[in-house]
Amino acid sequence: MSRLITRRRFLIGSTLTASALALSGCDVLVENPSVQQALRMAEGLTMRTQRLLIGDKTLAREFTMADISPTFRANGTSMPDGAEYQALLSQRFSQWNLEVGGLVERPTKLSLAAIKAMPSRTQITRHDCVEGWSAIGQWTGVPLAAVLDKVGLKPQARYIVFHCADEYEKTLDGSGWYYESIDLVDAYHPQTILAHSMNGRDLEVPHGAPLRLRVERQLGYKQAKYLMRIEAVADLSGLYGGNGGFWEDRGYEWYAGI
Amino acid sequence: MDTSATPATRTLIRRHSLTVRLSHWLNVLCMTVLLFSGLQIFNAHPSLYWGQYGADDDPSFISMQAVEDGDAVKGVTRVGNLRFDTTGVLGLSNVDGEQTARGFPAWATLPSYQDLATGRRWHFFFAWLFVINGLIYMVYGFLARHFRRDLLPTKNELSPSHLGHEIADHARLRFPKGEQARHYNALQKLTYLLVIFVLLPLMIATGLTMSPSFNAFAPWLLDLFGGRQSARTLHFLTAFSLVAFVVVHVAMVLASGVFNNMRSMITGRYAIHVQPQREPKP
Image: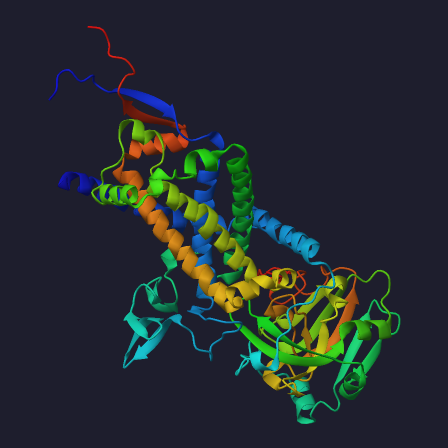
């Protein structure tokens, strides 16, 4: 019997060693470009399947005041340190304008007061970080659809790109500025808003003052903060790393619905 | 020894169909990648909460953290109010010779280094493969009567005395022989049914409940599991229930004849020793 157990232990031991070897071999596999390319197929499959199931206008769950997180964790940049942003902040964003351009009929600049005067939507929604945590907050802002209708999209426009005031990664070539993009399905979704208020107060700096994007059916990194410029484009390949966003250029999925 | 007894003859029976064998090994691959990439994803925020929301300032009920203790740093795993020193494995472990704050250690994550984006790519690709494989297996299981024929316990097998007898036999590592080895025993049937119809579907459902888009499609899942953070916690706990199943499963495979078991899951043929139907004439 003891001999049997010894043999069994040996077998278990060698299996564990074999899997440990297989795992260090995994890192080689992980870095193989064709493997990476193959794995990317899952993103398209997920996006098409989810879009098919959900429909374009179905709302993300909205919560009640009682559900709001006591502390809403601020993530990413908490204070953009660029001179331009610092100057705008010191004047409490009275000189700040949102530039709306690209493939639009009537490029425009909107002051914070003008944005606040537009029709607004208030929603209590859950913010899901790609890391795994969630926080619930109340957002008030202008539906992106209203802004796009105001400027008129050209027929070639396919994506809306959001340029931000924070340089999240300092690089010599300036490739570290935060930006994000969504397609027209999400751009015209009723809950997609440019939020200027959170939990009933003006947006605080750690949460993206003066204006941030809310795309409620996607993860936190799509919710671009410190908006400076909105650009309608036909494709994303010409911007920064070509993948449509700061984190997308660093390996994350452009479709962040899961 | 009774000399009049006929010696049992060894017979190879067909135990596992091709579909079962293929789906089994594909599942081994998927669950292995899903576990190790899942631990990579968990490491991005190694705390678990209950409810709709949960982040750093909210009370967690499981967490793995590196905590300063005087001059030293310790890996501390907390479950509710219980705290365990798990230095070297959970919370704080060795990465290339340096003590590093991370939930699970490098040998338990895919890739071994911290890379959430890659962990997600692997996790979702193999989640698709796992779901497709599972769907094919389910359709086959019902249509080919695999569930009814091989996994549904008989009324007799569910009687407390029978189950008690089987548990006692298993504990002594005594496994069915002869004709009885032709079919799964009741404990096997119940365990496989639990894994196939409860644990694995629960993994998929809790996983999808963490998807903000899928929430818009099926908000009732949020109510069922008590929120996204509860679903994340259940996803983790169910994963470790499956790890526990695999440990016992592999141990049983080793204990009850590793060669015969492996052959049956690879070629389909399983050897049993049965008494011949008729007494051979002398």
